[in-house]
Image (cartoon, rainbow, N blue to C red; front, side, top):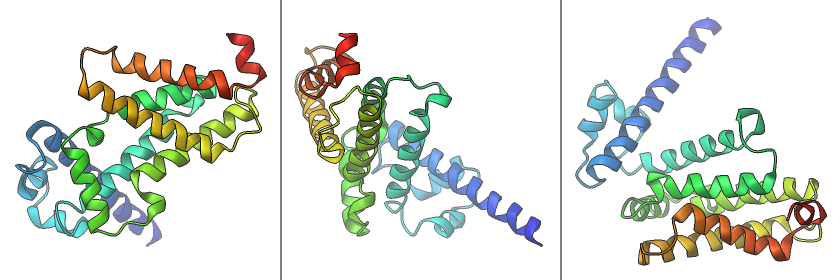
Length: 205
């Protein structure tokens, strides 16, 4: 019985994942407003009614997409999954991956923000706060490795890095004649590190 339940739960998780993958691809290719629930269900190879077994409305899938993409980001930052050994390098990697994510591109990012407000998601799981937490974890690891000054508050520095990231995103989208986005982000972290660096990071410069 437990084995049967396990298979059932596994199938539910697989269906939910297919719906999220289909939705993200359609939102990216066709736009959020023009994408319908029926199209998402068809792309996921399920009946339209199945969608509503997992998400009450189309916009209810957006918070789930954010949570899913953040989990993928966390997994990508694990050294055992091929991420750099240096925590500071992983911070740069994280910002580069977030910058390329469809959910942060306009106008889908506006829809994501609206969905979180509409569905009254707790502040701790909202995209900005979740990204700060992830960055703060990397800062803490960088402090443990001696790459960042241990006297600094990891949460505060995570907030600073997040704010710097969004500022650079705005600059890039305002003027595409600026440097490539990945280069801008990496240079911003290097600039920040001039003030936040610990002894291990300074030895590499």
